[in-house]
Image (tube, rainbow, N blue to C red; front, side, top):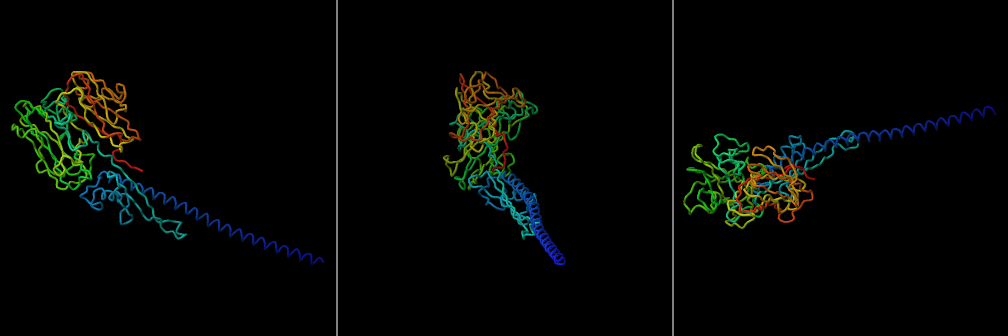
Length: 492
């Protein structure tokens, strides 16, 4: 009996031992499985972080490429989109410098954006090797990203029509001679910065030569047609009762024009080298030649391209520097398509414009800038030099697109130094200024407007200036306009 009990106890112990061993085996299997999962998750986390960093780098490359390339948009119609197009090649070159060489270790596709010729999208893709994910048979993962950049087009100053200034307008395009004092209204062409003409040395810190550039924009509807640029009364005549040219005693000047092909960097008109045509106008007493439109010599572009042609204007005074030569040349610019003035081109000031209103009037008005919807969310800065420096008091009002928008006002002297810092306008609805006699003589009047992010054009998009004076007035002034914000930026 005792032996049977002992045997039973031994059997039970063996059974318990077997069960314990089975449990330990199951635990080991389970632990091994969990460990594999944990290792896989850790490996996946490592790979995920690696892939995220690679996508970030690819996005940075796409953004850099888009920002560099969009400066050269829109692409000229004469150049097919692809290798050879400047924006396309620059975008790929920048991506290459960032480590993404097309056809070698990545695919880089610069793309035009339909409906937005001033935008550029760059797509970047690359196969990125993995680490732990190889255990699961995933050796590489494709990283794809893209970025779109936009270049804010230059503001159109003065007009968006085929003609700028002239006998049918309230103003003339104008440029002063280099020996005329700055206080006579031209901020950039005269090197005499004080109140005296014929200065011996340059005293105008804002003097530049050439002083002005004008744009001739060819839209898609006019591409491939014949473009002609004409000047009204380019010849100088001191007794001209129409354009009212002026000069000093026994001296004359030349008015020179150069037209450049479509600008690949429209925000910087002075860097062009592709001269399409050029012409110089001289002193002329023949009345059959003055006061009429005359095309620039050799300036008939057989197949106009999409974009902004740049017209450079320069004035050269003849005779020794000792001669009293205080020129003002007034003229007008227009563009024709296939010989017709009825077309969709636009002639406008690029960055700045010098104008003259020699014909007296008590309430002249003229266009300042065209504020199109893509300027929403920015800040518009208008700079008016020597504006309203008249012997009578009056009012200046911004009308048109910003008629109900208040502005801030700043006054600077002829050297750009602040005389009165930013403050509110003189009250009333919109931007309004009460002008005292000679209040802004030889000074800059700066106007600042906040453009809401929800801004859209309510009429024709034009911001205009209206004078209202007690008596008849004439005006000689310079206008510059800019958008205070990034001219080149990324868009969603």
